[in-house]
Image 1: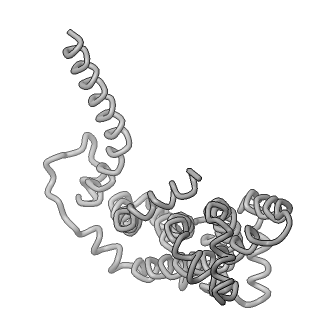
Image 2 (image 1 turned 180 degrees about the vertical axis):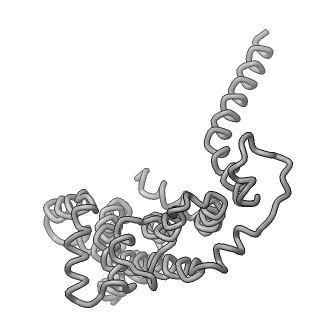
Length: 274
């Protein structure tokens, strides 16, 4: 009886999990399906599930516009902003956790900066970049992204550096290492999983960012989120091409997450148990 009851509970759990997965995955499957049919079939209701699949929408978004350039812009800006944030943010976080005396005030200031709504900074950033003749450039976007990725990186890495005993630093310095050598040779390898997890999130924020990109970019530096929004024209939403562009935009995120999943899990759990 107990075995039957246990089996029944397992079936209910599997059914619940399946429904939950379908709830989140069906929109993605629908976008994928819509991207693989013609423009006419994309608007057809009820949908024709037997429609012939085609890659014409993917070909069209790259042929008719600058989607390849938009893709490159997003990749370059997100990667550079992430690299700068991790490089300088990790050293700043390490210094604050190792400085003599309390660093509570500095930590609270960084937290306060991180909590500033990005929309508050859009107009000042646009005005400053225009005066510096940096509007419609990668530099403008990278500086804008650093305003919220750098505080995030510093704040997130506090817990990782706090989890590494300071005695390791002291032992390395006794052996003749400078503070910089101690960081790169001893501390950096130990905190690498945390750095990886933080870098992934920072990259995703830069890759998906829309508000700063909309204001600070032009035709040359337009990123993917802005390019996707531009597919809504006076003639209506180009739904088939929009779905194709969306699939292309999320593919790097899926591939990146799959590639570094192991390091991401290590980073998210690092320092949780001391």
